[in-house]
Length: 367
Ligand SMILES: CC(C)=CCC/C(C)=C/CC/C(C)=C/C=C/C(C)=C/C=C/C=C(C)/C=C/C=C(C)/C=C/C=C(C)/C=C/CC(C)(C)O
Ligand SMILES: C[S@@+](CC[C@H](N)C(=O)[O-])C[C@H]1O[C@@H](n2cnc3c(N)ncnc32)[C@H](O)[C@@H]1O
Image (cartoon, rainbow, N blue to C red; front, side, top):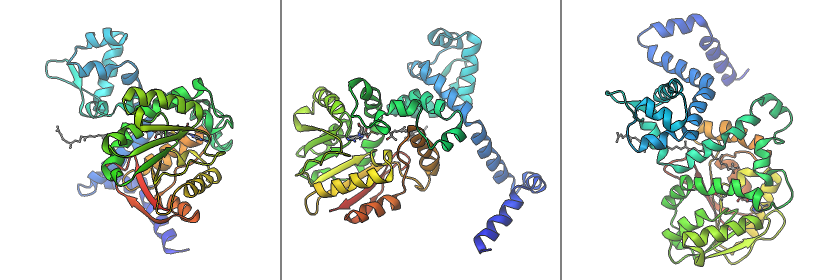
């Protein structure tokens, strides 16, 4: 038995001993830690109920209403189409989660986390599509046993299981969700990397072009292009034109798992794409990017990464199960992605820190 096995065995015997727990909760010195641990475990046990409170707040548009000004429970009931008792129950539950807050005069306003959440539009859209994830996770053991996929989320992300390229109706919902949640990512990446050092940039799997349009504003001289499935490319054309950056963006339609990538770009970006794919297609994509880049051309890869310090649950717990339900891919750590990039020939691979690693980390590599 090695030292680590001995240490964890000893620690776990103590922590699971009811006598120790009782003692630690009573002693003034250990009480704060015991309470914090209990709270953490309670949150884990009750997380689904919390998520459903949030779901009710988003779907009833309660937070949007409260953002317009304080409301009585009766007004909330009328606005959300709930009986007054139901509205009061929801408002109190949400207050316990800091989504709402009761004023001294009895009216309700946004709570501090409710206000912060509204500052990130993409979060509400994520919450609104989570019913698909929860349907697939209703029996997590069954999902794990069948190796993932085959459910609501796999149908939503049609490219995860379908070899076809998808038609307009199939790609519309996920493309709209990705565009709506892009601000969570784009700001972080643009703050962390100077895009204006490049001449021509290609965003592979660029969706509707929301990331490109954000970069366009930050680097006015950069030539921009997007590569995505043809049906997504059609949406990108429309979205970029109506966002006013269309004249700077070239759209290439195709599959990066079947077609070569266009050449002549000194920067290729891969934003929230690699984690969607199992190891073989992911290696294929990295190899294809390496082949498309000129010497000293760069790959900038941005996505939430596994085992990121301070954001561990977002990686292996949330995206681990999300991508399992979707039926393709896995969250990878920076080190794993760096190893894959090195194996296909990239060099000078490094991490660029972002202000909010919970939403995205960045890997930069050079051909
Ligand atoms: C002034 C006063 C009163 C106090 C000051 C105190 C202070 C400094 C407070 C801080 C306030 C503040 C700045 C809060 C900021 C909060 C933020 C930025 C919160 C951000 C939260 C982000 C969340 C919850 C992100 C969630 C993202 C999700 C769920 C993403 C899901 C993505 C999916 C499903 C992607 C799918 C794509 C695929 C298929 C995997 O490729
Ligand atoms: C999770 S989305 C990310 C979109 C965008 N980069 C963003 O962060 O908002 C993954 C993107 O990869 C595209 N994609 C998936 N498989 C593809 C393939 N084989 N060839 C080209 N694009 C593909 C999807 O259509 C989708 O737009």
